[in-house]
Picture: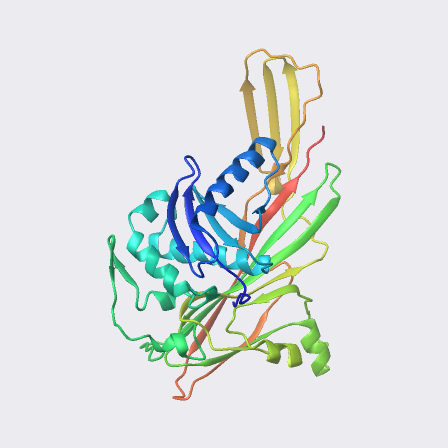
Length: 377
């Protein structure tokens, strides 16, 4: 991630209750530090009006902000910066701080001022993001309790290495890579049983325990790949909105749909995708709501295989002459060894110059996303 050269950032962590500045870092010095006071005023005005905006301006200074827990993270600029890049960096800050402190909130900032300042100095320099991978940062900014230790004064090789997301010299006795294909189903079903909207959101996650600097090649039953190679046998899927980890060689994927990469060590999300297709409800639920009096309501919910839940409520006597709305039924589930879309890992090739043998393991999981079934009103 590289922001425009005109991008000026002053990261400010503030309390949501008293709006007090906790910590601030001005990278270019062309925005006055006192400008943050105008952000608080604008924020309170918009909160009162119920019209919060992610970008606020005072004069020629613009405030781009996000809220996390009891904190506001604010970036200030006096230029026409690329807002999407600014927000990407702010969310990356949250991710890095959470990796270090487990929970990002007011207390964790107050207890770790030194670490926060060190991280801000490494994450960005003069308005340009530098090292934003928490695993690489932890190699030379280590934390014990509330204190900071610098392991070595020299800059780690990963900072200047072409493969900045992976360290050199990694060794494992047993070389393995675990692949999780996880799909979440979003379904909205009306009271008549018709599917009003549905899609599948998927991700491929890796847990890599490989020595050296291996190159991995992942093959899926991608419809476009089969079309390019002239094969059309078997079930294929069409993926949309595909997003890759930075390790994937995008030019290779665009040319021949090969997913080729040097993986980060440990856990990472290799890619995410969306499949816009009609999905039949995997789990069907019927509900019957009966009112016996002003103080008694009985709800019966019936699922597949005649699983039945009956709830009886004795309530204070309250009469409402208006028609009561009935919220939809939300279903949570997880199905192992199954994907709705039919996506498959066809192969995983592991190439490393030492020639060791490595074992790839694949697991498929389908789970509920926004899965709702409406009831009769």
